[in-house]
Length: 258
Ligand SMILES: Nc1ncnc2c1ncn2[C@@H]1O[C@H](COP(=O)(O)OP(=O)(O)OP(=O)(O)O)[C@@H](O)[C@H]1O
View 1 (cartoon, rainbow, N blue to C red):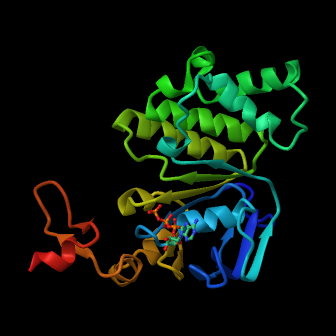
View 2: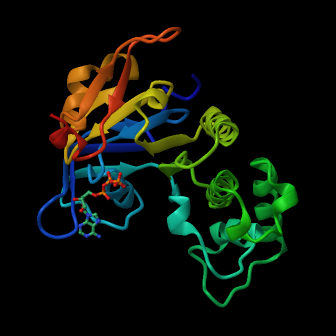
């Protein structure tokens, strides 16, 4: 893969982050290189969003080191970012240009052009004037990727981007993430989907602290998954045409089962 020899876009060393004096996430030591897609795995409350908020500068490290070599753009969960007032896909993409500029300066022609180009880049040129709230989940995710492109973010953070998407939209978004990595960006994808994460370059497993970090084939052992998900993991027997599969039990399910 190209660009892997260059300095990392993100590097943390024993990073601790929290909302008060006590960290909710600690011991995080990983790096994200240009051209790399890293899956961030963990249970509900494991600290994925908290890590992203630290990378975005919204939370100050309580301990350890956090170094960023480029700008971060975020693709938040679509339900949370869904807007009730009428705002077009173009408006949302334009927010990438407006961030960090004085509030009284209206976006100019160059910024509108950049936003339209970014929407074209994610395959949504024709939907630029459509209301954001009317778009499908997958289309909204791609508009938010366009916003990150307008911000010229070389580090792209995606929080559960595949949740609720159909197979075609998932494929489209996966292809788009591959393209972003292919042009030298670094992509962090928070996800619950262990099987999908096996296709990324590396995985970062969090459960209030870093459990493991490395290439999926070496890292996603049953022990690591059990430590990541608190033991609520089961191996499903092989069925016709498929090998053994891992399944995550929803929180509490495990406790009531036997
Ligand atoms: N604004 C906040 N103030 C205080 N504590 C918070 C806040 N947001 C999250 N936490 C706590 O931090 C811990 C980690 O939460 P975080 O949202 O990072 O987990 P997550 O891995 O993103 O979970 P999910 O998969 O459910 O989104 C949880 O215990 C949570 O209760």
